[in-house]
Length: 303
Image 1 (cartoon, rainbow, N blue to C red):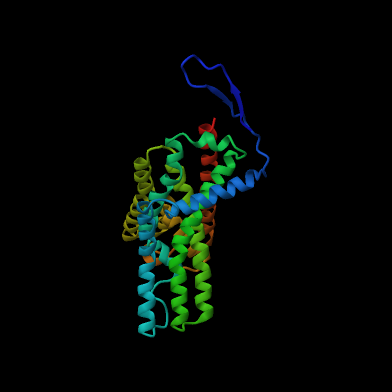
Image 2: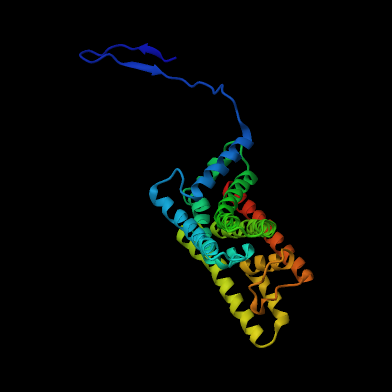
């Protein structure tokens, strides 16, 4: 309660008072690290699609989501109209075909997720509360991976519903849909980790966008060209090994080796089981390395 302390009134002047406002301690519930981590995750996930932000922030992510789903809708419409016996594209192939759109989404949203905190030096403020470096990194990583899963699984759901409406075989479509979900979940984890690591290097969003595009898109184009050259020169044994140098071809190799998916590699021959095991180890190693690098980066920033 404010306490008024009257003081002497100077001649010819107004009465002056000093208000002792004081400070009151917080007596409410303290929700702790788990609540802070969940809140940071939900806000980051909403921000990945511009929810709770300006209309301008919603345009690009929503547009990219529509672009991802539109070809799937067209394929479904054609399959229903022509009484097709199967969908024109396998569930596991859809994300590979649309990898340019996925890479553009990561390039736009990864810097948005972390660059502003670095640019405005707000990271130490997070760590002044009951939240640690691992909580911050886990929340940001999980949020972007979840946003990517929504982006990549949405078209697969459109394909699956359309296949059922077209009265295609339920068992085959359900199996293919499940395989596609496993594939895009792995892709989401890998792309989110790489995007965040690259974006966390610099507080400048423009540099982060360019670097993410270079790593995800240019690497895929380069590896694909070199694989095609190797195929034309009958060096087919090198094709599977070349696939280790691009995030997209890594996912392609894993799903063709273990999910029965057709490969986009030249000649349509993906890695065998032995090579596929190496692909899995590389993908899991990259995901773990991205988490470790992010934790180390923000441990230094938060000091």
